[in-house]
Length: 317
Image (cartoon, rainbow, N blue to C red):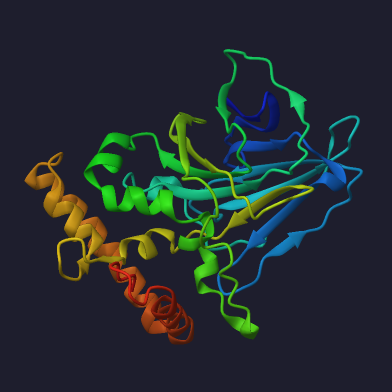
């Protein structure tokens, strides 16, 4: 059984434990080491505002990830348990429907969870063990977890597609997921699209099942001062299309970022480049389809980018 412990200053923030429950396609569970009133769970749907999942703080909470089984869609489920016996009382899926599994492609990491650690964090003491892979976030207060397929090639992604790699390190978790589509009721909600602090740190990835790995990035955001452990799950269906539909002027003219990276890529054969190109073109068409069928949301994104990127070299949309 594979296990991951996310730690801060020698204390456990949360554990991620392989389940492999074939009956309900449960791949792994997330066990926060802070419970009760000190734990908050949020979900963020596309075209919506962040919603808090309300639960009885006297109960014990775990969150499980269930893959698409050919009939039932992917779901993230909150399990309410008795605090003493740990017996299941009920389970309820978070209201997230636009979710994709990491099996969809081996080219991009898929966002799963953003963790905000409280300032005065004091969790369970971590004792080094070969049963756990440790993700030590140091003094940072923001952790982003991405899912990757087992055959995900880190060297190829980091060195072969530097524009995409730096994009993931430069921009926040929400930037390429649901919150860029939020514009209703005059609430732009873009305050979290950039970090105020040091550069992101990419921690070593680890497998959590036979075919899923988790990749962790972390950063110290000096503008955030939490008193609770916050877990944020986001709809990720359009994550890859939005990433792919990015422009750059790195070579002196406007071009799609993936064309620039593919042309300069020295790690791939011509046949491999054709496969990547086919993948990128497919994802780019998904974004263009979104643009066509959701004009109001697209116009909001476009006008926002015009405001924040006026005078900058990079062209976003």
